[in-house]
Figure 1: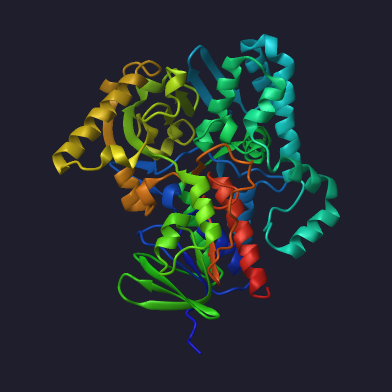
Figure 2: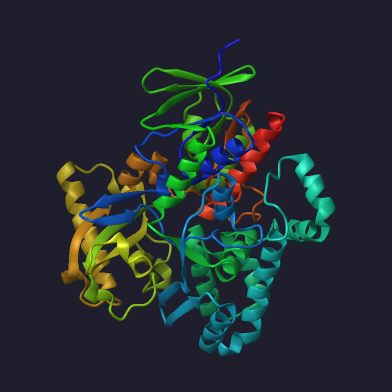
Length: 495
């Protein structure tokens, strides 16, 4: 019999892969993580330039609460005896939208008061809608969040929490837009709820599952938004430290070129030609990238998923170091800018801004702040360009975004000390994601989460984890996926 290099091989050291790996190691399972890049984290990684420590992705972090079951990042770190100091963020987002300028405060009642002040005629509907989000969250927060594919877990949870389980089942096929329209009629307020969804799901309310919204719209007030001291990259570094201390292994510069199912074993072939064998393989690549590593065609069921979902856009990202004078009167870390509702989903329509140094000044040199600015962009807009054309487009597009931000940060252009621009091509190159995509989005209105695939695949002994599995995008969501995947894989190994 072929010698095993590990019981479980995890492809990719993004947060989903690392949570899977650490949960398995905590159960005593031998795990090897293969990461194509030089450091862990994927889109939750970091890079340093000229004294600045930039987050690769968003800095709006859920999952660091202290109570309940939805604090998945706290729990993932604790499983391998790690913890992180975090800094509470009093405001989730400051919205700068057409005729709407308001903040989502950490305090729930304060948020309701601000929104009701802007839409007084919808006072009752606002409370009814967001209270229904709380009902979803309370169901989630009362049960251990593990694999929905493992029947023993499902039976145990149902026996212990029947009302919570039945409550969640009712919401599985529902989308946010349908629920919002039960209570709200003002079209402008419904557009605001579209943006409340779009800012993390990259689709409006009609295509955002209600269970996901229940988690996000409530946990920002329950566990809150908490920024890790030292930057988002600390999450992956701490998980990796815990992994290795518990006996797990991680290899960097280990690009996987092929996956070969072989009876009750499964092998992966590296770009170097080296072959590694395991009982199970977990891929933290997107589902598209994972199946590109296989020689056989995907099953009918897998193709159905490809027909229901499409790749979301990637992003044009600006990492800026700016003089502190620009933020003298700015209190909020996260901002969203949109001047025209019709452009919300358009190429470079909505602009997202994070200023993490308002929470952790040590990320920048003294006297400076970090601006991480990103806006949706598709790979098609960046293809077929010569190197010179590519650099010129990066400069033009960055200037256009910065000009727009002058409306809320006057003087920004002249205050820039350092600038680095990333495109969908950058995301594809460094994150190994097809077209640099943020993840899957439904092509049409979905039945809530019912069409989203779980961790199993049609290939024996191959599992998927991350944002192209239930429940979708976001660090806390992929941590959920990691908990579920590890539980499922361990159960197949009799552990």
